[in-house]
Structure formats: structure tokens, C-alpha cells
Length: 321
Image (cartoon, rainbow, N blue to C red; front, side, top):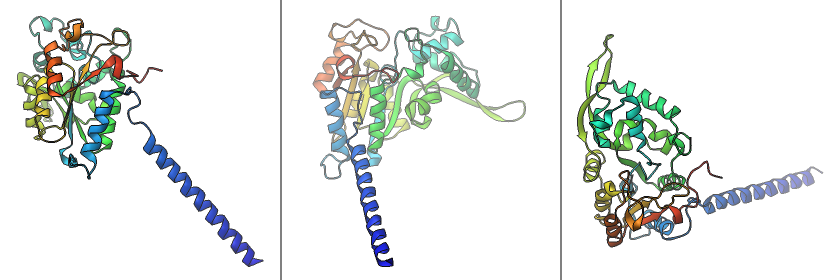
């Protein structure tokens, strides 16, 4: 009797182990087969991303890139979140300092000078409060909910394959650093933007703090983007993503490196779900995030991939059904 019982227990244990192994294998297989880019429609843009990641992360590939060199840079306004009808940071500044735009027309200068003299910690607290209460006039949702779901998936996909993702924005560095980690998973030290000077000092209790100064240190737009990348990262990106003329030099700089490179531009051509503006391809002109015909033509010559919001993105926002 004891022998038959031991035999039964061994058989039961073997059966349970088989079931457990099969379950683990099924779960692993399901994880591997899950689509990491479900909001991207099939097409050249999606294929280009997947092909590039495979080429650069497969040790057997001649285009393999060591993890330390897997740098990907993203513009923010119009590339990661909605920028129309006015840059969110401009709206923040105008609400804090009414009339500032009459003397400062450029976002970079606004970001650096309009709120000068303010303690940096106070500025950060004001940004958090504004983001918690401000609503976009079209969707009546917080701006932090108006990030593009396909780009969020792309950020996670790249990081899952050993890439370090950076924001390189013409907007204010201090502004974007407040929310970048919570919204995009990008820590503040990986945010490069137009930066104003700060001054070190002490409060009435002798505690040290920083104050924003009315002096622009870095205009992180146009040629300032690759200059800021060199200053803050010290490595040339192997992938760069933008949406306007202000991103042109960053994409040029990225594409000019050796080995596999990926440069992509988001074209806003979906007036129904978001906005349509160019003026490339006959789209309406815009002073906010312009995508000119010249930029489009350069993309074709250089082999950059143009992402059509209308055709390449099946789902724009996470809150969509």
C-alpha cells in the first residue's frame, strides 16, 4: 500500500510539473507575441521602426549597436503631445504673466525670461498646479492626457530594447522636467530644452535655493538641438523624432552618423481626429509647429520617414475607445 501511494504521489507531482511548465511556456509565448505597437497601422512607418530596432539590437546583426550607444531623441510639442492651437507652455505663461507675448514673441525667450525672479521650486509648483487644472479648449481634458498613444508605445518599445530616450524640445527645460517622468517615463535629467540661467542664494532662514534669471543659456531649437545634445548627452543619437522645421538639424545630425539610423517626422494631416497643418502637401499653414514643403522634400532626399497621423496611427489618444 505505501508503495502504491508513493507511486501515486510521484505521478501527481510529475503531472503538476508538466502543467506548470506548459503554463509558463504559454505565458512566455503570449508575452513574446503581444504587439508592442498596437496603435500603429501596418505600413512603412511601423515597418521602419521594427526593422531598425531588430537591426540595432540583434548581436548577430552587422548593424548591432551596443546598449550604451542606443540614444533616441524626441521633440515634445507636436511630436509627443498636442501643440495646437497654441503651445501649452505659452498658454501657461500668458496666464501667469498676461501681456508677456507683446514683448516676447518666441517660446524660447518666453520660457527663459517671462517668469524671471521666481524661485525655481515655486515655478515647479506653479507648473504642477496649472497642469492639474488647465484643460485643452477642444477636448476639455488635461494636457497630460493629450499625449499620442503611438508615441507612448514607441517610447516603451525602445526602452524595452535597451534604448535611452531623451526629450529634446524648443520649449522650456524647467517646464517639461516637471512632468516628463510621470507622463513619458523620461526622468528630468534626460530632458533637454531651452534653458534660462538660475542664481544661487539663501532665504531668510539661511536655506539655499535657486532663482530663475532673465538670461537665455540655450535656445534648444533649430541648430540649438544638436548643440544641446552634445552639451547634455555627449553622444550622437541613432534615432530622432520630430514634427517641424525646428527639428530639422536634429534629424540631419542623427542621420549623418555611421551605421543604422532612424529619423522620423510626424505630419499632422488629420483634421477630424486632431489638426491638419503644414504647409507641406498643400495643408494649411501654421506658425505653431510648421512642417514646410522644403522640410518634406528634404525628408524624401535624406531617407527620413514621414509619419502620416491620418494613415499610420490607428489610435491617437489613450482615452479613445
